[in-house]
Image (tube, rainbow, N blue to C red; front, side, top):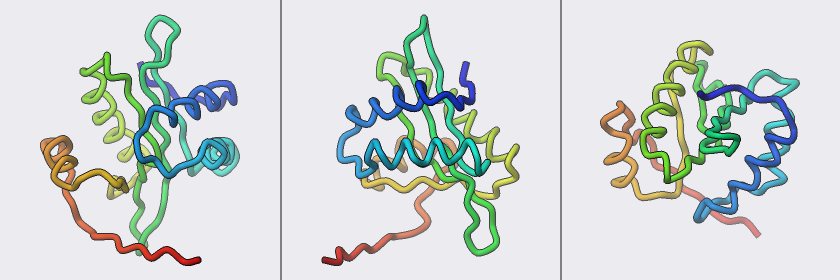
Amino acid sequence: MIKQYKDTNVFLEICDKLKEVKDGELSEKSLYGYMTAGIYNNKIFTFASYDKGKMNGCLVLTLIEINQIMGLDILFVWLDAHYPKLFKEYIAFIDEKAKEYKAKRIISITKKSAKLIERKYGKYGYKKVYNIFVKEVN
């Protein structure tokens, strides 16, 4: 069962999962800051699921407004590979939360291949909409 958490011990456990994410640019300090800010601003929501006392999935969502349209941004998600059915459960959960928060779009920014994302998420209604260009400034 996926539940919302506002417990800093759970936040620390979620931060530990960053070590298991390849090519992630989000730091533990930043993620922890986002999750604690969410306790007060009601725009960042932290969720996790457990099996026999061990975390098997976690999710951090951010409610954002882009061009006067409410969006739900998937800031961070981690799922234990030993629970393949959990992916569908989290996808459905994100859809429910989007409706609950009255978001018109679910947004996810990733460095992973667009083809990989379309193959994995496309059957759930996700599609590539934007291209993002980045310039490093020194």
